[in-house]
Length: 79
Image (cartoon, rainbow, N blue to C red; front, side):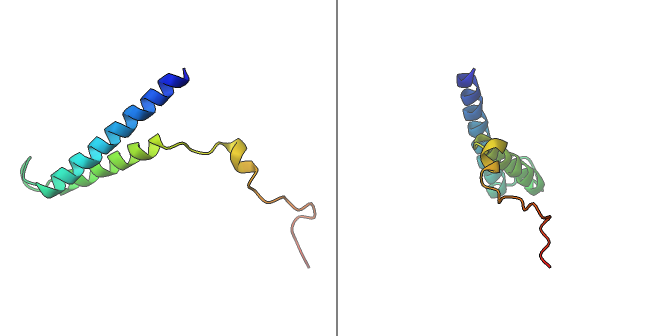
């Protein structure tokens, strides 16, 4: 099961890089699909960046709770 997850992460990364490159190509050669393809190029690039960011591993809640400061028992008010 873990191997399948890693495979899908690599597929998402490759798809994201491909979309980013396609958006850059549309920005450079905008007249491929006619006039005014800037909006399509921007949306394609943003989707590609989103897929690339989905490839990275995110910290779990268990790991982030160790980095938090301890809670004060008196409510935090210092008069």
